[in-house]
Length: 432
Image (tube, rainbow, N blue to C red; front, side, top):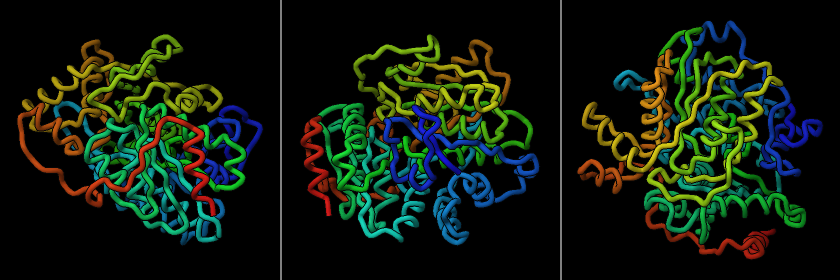
């Protein structure tokens, strides 16, 4: 399988090069040159397959090149240690994607990528540097997945003071091959520093670098596993399901669209954002205006310029021979998030985290307009205990956080301003 840049479909690279580059040299995102939808027999027998069977069938066409069957099986086995639980609440299903080591949906893609790069790195002499910008959950998931993976060093940039205490402990509590940088700025500032580093030819000459954000195909494509596995647990092919997806950098939504391209029967899509509503504006008007980021309760979705918008647009176009399904978007305020968490807990005894609460609220808005004929699956992206102080304040509860992979105080971090020359000097200090 070859991959091309969203900015130049004629220039193609191998899967290994796409994974190790992360971002194309022209600044575009990588897309597989063909989709290879899963076969009709696969879909008709889906309910009889095991979770590892599904993962192997989905991922092998896109990541199998250059790996032995044994190597590929090790990657599959690694990601399958993270279960996906489907629960029924009121008139909807909730896909709990947060049963991995850091209690966030991103553990699935991060685990796949760590396994894949670990296999690649066995044949390399030079250290590989992974650069990650995070608004919260990505950093912890990547840190947990790559901790103590030989030959790989991870540099995680996060906005100082804009992640929860648990998220910071997960990002900056491990040490070893995990380096954490608290940036005096926003998530978009962190993302800009990472992008500039990837597009700096002088830096690439001396460091092997890639990204573990959802811009990397090895993080993005495996997230589609959660959609097909959730579908398998609640219905038989070919019945359609609609999905409601909390949206920040659009990696999760574009992964869902990828699953649709593989043949997943979709009724419609609902995208929810917090008050940083650039994607909702894009859906309504075909474009969005740049606005200052707003700090919200669902802070992992505090993204003003979503990286994966190009992928969303491409996956919905006719080039892929896909009939685009309806997609609606809703902006959810902090007050609506709080009201939703309280109401769902009072009525059903189920606790939503702030991000999944945006999805529940968006579906309620959809229902008010009678726009949802299909049964719905909400993608629950984080365990509520990751935001324990907020949840206790909203619900008037007291409690502790369940086990999540961390290593004590967050003392393994450096402070940096949003200054690219200083970030570049920092990275150069790690050259071998």
